[in-house]
Image (cartoon, rainbow, N blue to C red; front, side):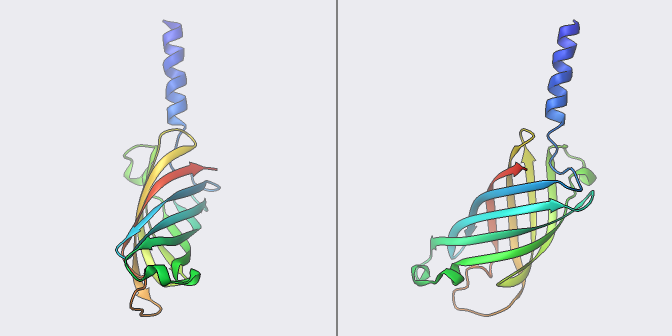
Length: 160
């Protein structure tokens, strides 16, 4: 009986310790696919916790291919870099301590925008994420501006 209780307690501790956002000093790295109308690409991001529910970070996307005409684009047209601010609300909505929901704002080389994302951690170090981003104010109007449209990111997230 004692061995069973010990095993359950250890399992509960190991799963319970896999929090999605731990607050100040928490660091997340994410890598995944960037999906949008004009292009498909790669997205990477890093977030650093400043407080119980606040984090800042950087995000970058690179368009690999997609609609016709994109193959002629230069590097600076395919690449975007964003500074981001998140309100990590996982502990506020309290669905599961392994789940984090984070709306936020971002300032990029191409636009000022917003994003809404969610992370779920299976272990203390590994999980999955999805994020939708959208422009609120565009800097330039181009005929095919791949970073000034609604986009979805899906991929893996890691605790650092």
